[in-house]
Image 1 (cartoon, one colour):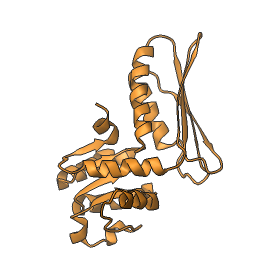
Image 2 (image 1 turned 60 degrees about the horizontal axis):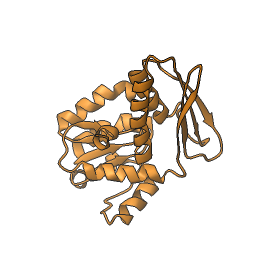
Image 3 (image 1 turned 180 degrees about the vertical axis):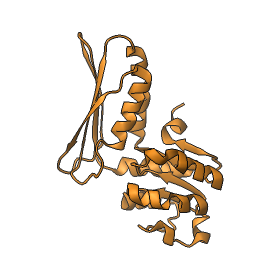
Image 4 (image 1 turned 135 degrees about the horizontal axis):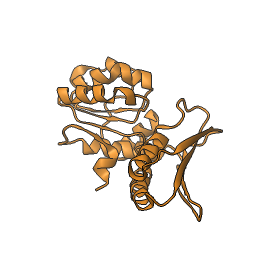
Length: 211
């Protein structure tokens, strides 16, 4: 993901100050002029988020697996006055699906529909279910009133496919998203980085792009 973000940054004619696996090794003076785009591991983000909050101008976080400390993370960024945008998936298409799931779940609520999610990713993906599947499940639960089960499949080099089903006694509704590559995640992350200018507080990408 780091290389893909770097490619998007250069294609858009933006300045790339650095690309590193050890974000805390950056010069603090340089960091203060930059937006940190973090696609690392849950362990790395847990170790680094306070440094990121205290030293960068803003942060875009695509790393997942830290939901249990979300309150602590948000407090650190608010205390430092550093804006942060985070998401389990920065794809514009996936965020459009999030919006669709909200609407469909509202309509189906109380009408006998049972939800279920299946997500498929490459064999190298460390977490299961995916952060995106968890986000979809939370949306459905909040709007339909029932938490969907999630099946996770790891095979080949699949960038990411998510299928949300709503099944009743009379029909079956499917809402799906298939990523052709991970470039969409990088594109959205750079869009988010540009959105941090003049922003305050901690936000999800979805709440900023879906009105």
